[in-house]
Length: 163
Image (cartoon, rainbow, N blue to C red; front, top):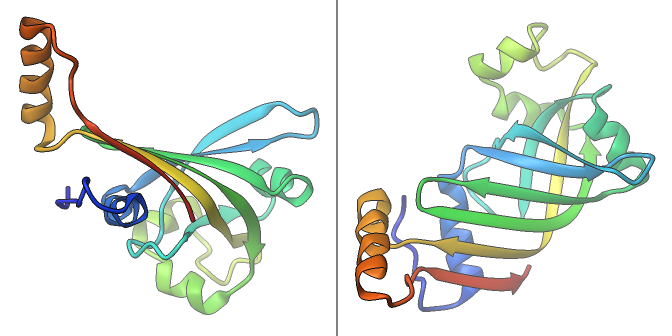
């Protein structure tokens, strides 16, 4: 995990944390108003306020965002957690799709990026919140044990920001 400036601007910290996440749980709202979450692979390591995912055009995530574009995205590692709220849209951009393409994606979509059933999902984040523990898994464990022994609250880092 990159060393994030937890004591500075929450937006900067959030931007520094996001490249460390590979998978996200994307939550949409179905036609009956029920929340539905599914794991998706984050396709771009550089966070500029948008997250990109490769999805099937006929998937439930595409169906849901066409009528209700508001989504929640949660990401986690052993020592950091991020929650984003934003609006999603389907983006047909073959060049970008080719740039994101990999053998891992091909396992899901064997016809390749030119398959008309493959498209991109872009989530434009409007707000975000993070929680993190400095120093990784061992430091987190030591901090939790110290908290238990001393009775003092465990001190992690958190922040909230509009994007």
